[in-house]
Amino acid sequence: MITLSSQHTMQTISSKQVFNRHIAFIDAAVEDYQYLATNVMPGIETIILDSSTDGVLQIGAALGDRANISSLHIISHGSEASLQLGATELNVKTLWRNYADVIELWGKALSDRASILLYGCNVASGKLGQDFVQWLSILTGATVAASTTPTGNAFFGGNWELDVTTGAMQTSLAFPLTVQQAYQGVLMQFFPVTRYDDVV
Image: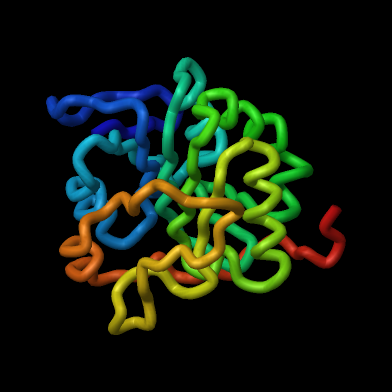
């Protein structure tokens, strides 16, 4: 497992073998993120995002010298058309106004048939949510999947179904069924600071 410091440098915090074709980015603000980080499927490298700094840039830094990544799993708090990544919101407005170049660079690290799975609650809900997923796909060239509902424990109304995709999704979830069922939290909906009434 790897964690990103506030300077966006990577530090190995486990001696486990690192795999680089599948990566799970887990925001440290997520409830019980340590449990999720230590229980990803075999073959998935885990990188923890520092919740005090810009998570979009942290992901960009982690992918900067890589190629042929098959899948990115991004586990963070979500809301309609928005992800909380570290100390920043990636949403339908900031995607184009602040991060389009960075997101395009994500795509350069991906393989031709790569997938990006977004685990935040309600990210794909509504027209703006579906637009957000589609635009992220356009910028990266990847197939993107996200959920219209809460993600996580069923007792709190959650599930692990990413029911909106931009194409055929061949990538499995980052967590085994037993982990999905045992996880006690939800990747809860937050209320974005950014207003969307003047989106592009």
